[in-house]
Image 1 (tube, protein in one colour):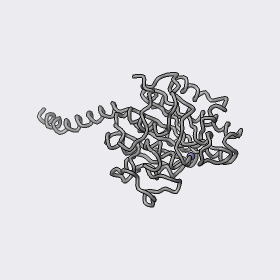
Image 2 (cartoon, rainbow, N blue to C red; image 1 turned 90 degrees about the vertical axis):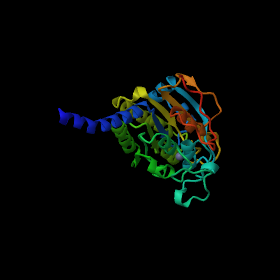
Image 3 (tube, helix red, strand yellow; image 1 turned 120 degrees about the vertical axis):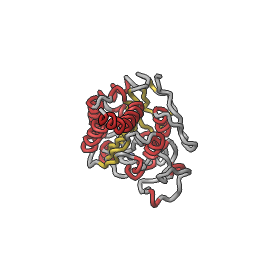
Image 4 (tube, rainbow, N blue to C red; image 1 turned 60 degrees about the vertical axis):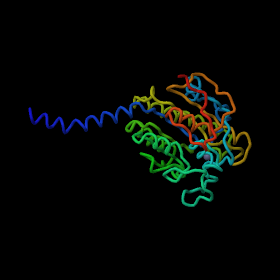
Length: 300
Ligand SMILES: [Zn+2]
């Protein structure tokens, strides 16, 4: 008996600590952001067979008229989605941007020497959160605070990216996951951003979104998760970077826990509104250099 009591005293602090950690994690939200590179709002309008997109729009909040930032180039526009601010503030002006060689400094930096992205902000507030990114385009890994992430994985293509991300969702049950898919932009660059191949690629993207929904259901996270479908830019002819509407206007679909259903979000909406909206879910106050606003999409 004495031995048992001694053991209990040794074990109790560990048990209590473990319990508290779990409680904090259980209270944390789950957000999955599926980033589809090069998907213009017109892509969804042109596509016919998109059952997953339709389901998420009919049962969530959405707009096909969200304005991205200039230049309509991947690294600057993804950084705007990650930070909630504009390129001249976060400093990512082109796809050649790297932390060590950046040409201008961000207006503010965090402990990782980045303008704070969602990854750095969520880590700063929740040391125990599980968060990270899986990306088809390797440069995404340079744009985020890798040291703040539990996982930062570069997939070979949209399928290997998705399989790796789904495995992480099922095994780690992350609180914040960003996934980047590049095949949609590839179809635009090779055949044109209004081509048959581009539209077929939207339908392929839709079926890939279905794989993420399946993974969330398998992980018992579907009811607990807020899903964001976002895009960095569209394209015109076989390129992007300018300010044609097909380049600048992108979709946003938000579905799941705490989100209005069948709700069309009133424009103007900008891609820099995405980060502050996600920060609302995590109860984080955006820093003073964020230009976006939290969107009115919450049901509770
Ligand atoms: Zn892009």
